[in-house]
Structures are given as structure tokens and as C-alpha cells.
Length: 291
Ligand SMILES: Nc1ncnc2c1ncn2[C@@H]1O[C@H](COP(=O)(O)OP(=O)(O)OP(=O)(O)O)[C@@H](O)[C@H]1O
Ligand SMILES: CC(C)(CO)[C@@H](O)C(=O)[O-]
Ligand code: BAL
Image (cartoon, rainbow, N blue to C red; front, side, top):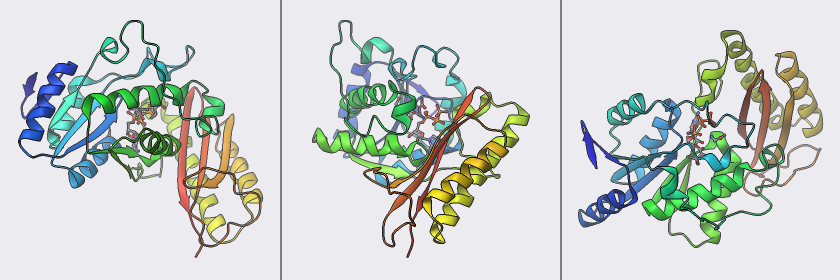
């Protein structure tokens, strides 16, 4: 265990365990924010949300190999530990957990945690390995940290629903809280991978978020779901993105398809999309409701 200014850096499960016992002894509740590092203002907003719900906040930084397919960017994923620690210290985060792979996946590991159905649709169709990796790592991190609450971003909306389902199914006594997506001034959802975008592609990426906002407004104003999705696909293509993996309107918790008609009043829904900007895959979503 080491202290970096005022933040406690925990590198092993046993250091974490001692820290957790001390928090309980002090009467603190533990709020947890899992991340893969390369922190930006979106992550810091999750720390702030965790501080509103708990007295001691811990962030994990671990680039989880099992959620990347072999052709994806595990090796090149940004790793910026020194800057991350500075940002967390300034945000008043209390501790950081930075385990190594063998602490989370012991030699001979043969245990899997997988949320059926929800993991196979939308993102799961295009990244079939992804949610299995996420539930395996988050269930292990939850066991290590044993927090009272955990905060996840709505930017990864399907991930948030899957973690809520997993926590409920496994009877974990952890309250999972979703936090709003933090955006750049042009509307682009902040993401660690945005740093891959060239200045030209970065400008086009702003139009991706704007096309989604336009579609959300149309549906809330009573346009047909089918024609709005077609229009959004045209707008995203016209902005220079492609291929488009999906634009979908779904129930906000079950993520079930809501058909092609207008959105029914009183239904909580979500519009979700994923598209490629060059070699960078962008995802985004917005809430939908009609009064
Ligand atoms: N713009 C954002 N607003 C709010 N939360 C966010 C935002 N971006 C990421 N998060 C949340 O931060 C947590 C950690 O995410 P992660 O470390 O993968 O960052 P990321 O920016 O989503 O990276 P990536 O580019 O790999 O998707 C997740 O719960 C994620 O939903
Ligand atoms: C939840 C998570 C930290 C698991 O590796 C990751 O999927 C992420 O950063 O969203
Ligand atoms: N933010 C989710 C992690 C990923 O897309 O790999």
C-alpha cells in the first residue's frame, strides 16, 4: 500500500482487504467505480456521484484482457497511470485499486459469470466476447472490493443494465447506480477511445451525437420509430461515419425491441447506436419518453 499525496494506492488483494477492514472499522460506507483508466471528466463525474452516496470512494484501474477480442485494441489501449492518479487525487477520491491479471484470473481459472439474453443483443451481436468479459471482471472486482454501492456510466448503457441484472441474480448486496453521460461541447460522449480520432474524424464524430439527438427529439415529438431510425442512419452516414452497427429503440430496462410505430406514452425507452469513425468504434444513447 502506498500514499500518493492523499490517495491510497492498493496493488494487491490483501492490501485491498486491509483497507476495506479499516473503512468498516471507521464506520465508512464504500462506493466503487470500476474503470480501465485513461481517465477523463466522465470518469470523474462517476467519482463525484459515488461520493454523494458513500463516505469512502475507491476506483479500480484494470485494462481487462477478457473483454477484448484478439483483433481489438487491448495492446494499444491508452495507459496513463500517473495522470490518472493526479486526476483522482484532485477529485478527492480516497483509494485506487490497480491489480494485476493473475490476481483476478488465477492460474487454472475455470469460472465464468455470464448474463444470458441481454449479453447477446446490440453490442453483444457485434462484440460477442465483450459482455462475458465484463461480467467476469466486474463480478470478481465486486468480490474483491465488496462495496456498498457501485457507479457505472450511462454511456455504456447496455453494460449498466447487464451489471444490474447480474447483481440482482447473484444476490449481491451492492446498489448499482447509473450516472449521466458527460459530453464534449459539440455533444460527443466523452470516451477514452476518442483520443484515437484524428482532428478531421473528431469533427465528424460530433455530428454522430447530433444525429442521435435529432432522432431522439423526433421520437419524443411522435415520429414513427421506423422512419426516425432510417433518417438517423442517413444522417450518420452523411456525417462520414460507417459502417453503422445499429440504431435501435428499446425498452429502457429490458432492452426489448419497441417495434416500428410511434413510442407509446408513459414507456421509458432508450435510443442506442454504434458506428465506426475510421478505425474507432463510437457508441452513444439517449433516454426517450412521451408524456
Ligand atoms: N462520457 C462518460 N460519461 C459518464 N460515464 C462514462 C463516460 N465514459 C465512460 N464512462 C463510464 O466510466 C466507466 C469506465 O469506463 P471506461 O474506463 O471503459 O472508459 P470509456 O471512456 O468508456 O472507455 P472506452 O473508450 O474504452 O469505452 C464505465 O462505467 C463507463 O460507462
Ligand atoms: C466496467 C469495466 C471497467 C470492466 O472492465 C469496463 O467495461 C468499462 O470501463 O466500462
Ligand atoms: N467502456 C466499455 C469498455 C469497452 O468498450 O471496451
